[in-house]
Image: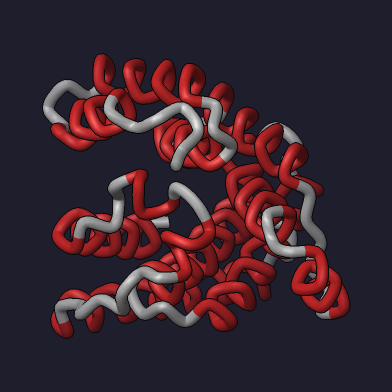
Length: 222
């Protein structure tokens, strides 16, 4: 878990530097599809992947001794999810990101089979369900042929479980829920979550900025 958390720190520092965490980036499919490929810091990228390699190596070694090791399964869930985020949001490699998302979901399902109360794992399943469920029907059908299913409402429900009952990832679950509500044009719920995050993390300027941006955004999202 240590190297996996280090990798998360590297990733979110890059997200912050590159402006990835602004919610308008995800407001609709057109905005997301037209996003530019970003230029990552090569040194941070190397440290990010080195930390993930270490996390994967340690986790697989533990699974060789105990296939139901909770921490190892959780570390692999986080690792695959971080790879999916980096591929999609920094490198703009959507197919690779979807592959990592599928991998993260598989690890999360194994983790939940071992520990049904590990609500952090629902973040991985929620992201997968929401992303695939948001795709156009023909694309969703093709993706399902690859073994990835999706349902937007199921995805939101899973994210709510992490947001409300998660241990490590509850704040991130709330951020993703706010983004989902922005996409669903549910401005009141998105704002409510952002206000709660602003109040809980007053040192982080991102939430106040997103509230201000949301308040100037038309309800229709146009």
